[in-house]
Length: 302
Image 1: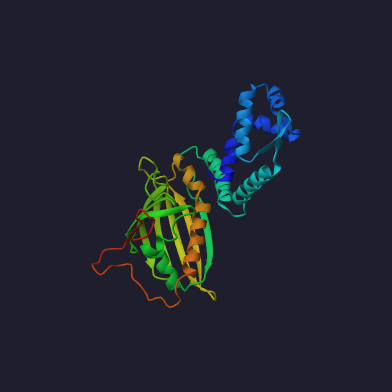
Image 2: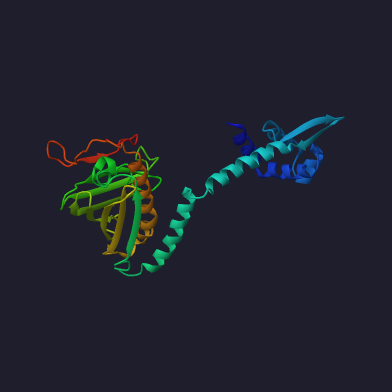
C-alpha cells in the first residue's frame, strides 16, 4: 500500500475524520479529543495512532498528557493527488467529454424513439482530409487487417472482422472494450452487413446493421464512401442513411456521430503512419478466400 492509499484508508473511518476536523482547529490532548468526539479514550487513542502511522497527525508528550496536532503537508499531498485525478479526467477532448456528449445524445434519442421507423431517413455526413493517396486510403477501407486497426470508436477494439470487398460480400464486425483482453465483459457490439458497390480508390458502399441483444437488427445503415484526390492526399466523404429503425435502436443511433467520428480520426492516424512506398496488397488470399481479421487475447490483429 502506497502513502496515498494509506492516507485514504486512515481518513475513510468517520470517527477518524471527526478527529481530523477537531485537530484542524488546534492541537488537542487525547482526553479532550475523546470528550469532544463523544467517544471512549482507548478507542480515540487507537484512531489517533492509526492517523499517526499514516502521517496525518503528529504527537508529543507534554507532562502527563499526549498532545496531537494535524500535519497539513499530508493533506496537501492528498489534495494535489486528487486534483491531478480531476484534471486528468476533465482534460479537453478526453474520454469523459465524449462520454458526457454521448449521454446527452442518448437522453434525446430515447425520448424520440417512440415508434418503429422513428429514425428513418436520418442522415449523418462525415469528411476527412487524409494524407495518403486514394489507393492507400482504399486499402485501409477494404483490407480486413487494416480495417481492424481503426474501425472502432475510442476505448474499444475489434474482436472479429470479416469484410469481403466485392458486391454481395459479407461484413461481420464485433468489438470489445480495449482492455477486455480475456472476454470477461459482454461484447460491446456486433454488426452484420453486405457490401453493395466497389469502385477501387473511388467509391465504396455497403449496408450494415448493429444487432440488439436478441440478435435482431437495431436499424440498417446505408454507408456511402467517396474518395477524391486532393493536393494533400485524399478527401474522404462519408454519408450514413438510416432505415428500418426500431424503438430499441436509440442507444446505437445516439453513438453514430461520436463513434464513427472517432473511428475516422483513427483512420487518419493509420493512413499517416502508412509507409510512403508500401507495396500494393490485395484483400484476396492466394487460395481465393477473403481475408478476415481477429484479435487474440492480447489484442494483436492476426
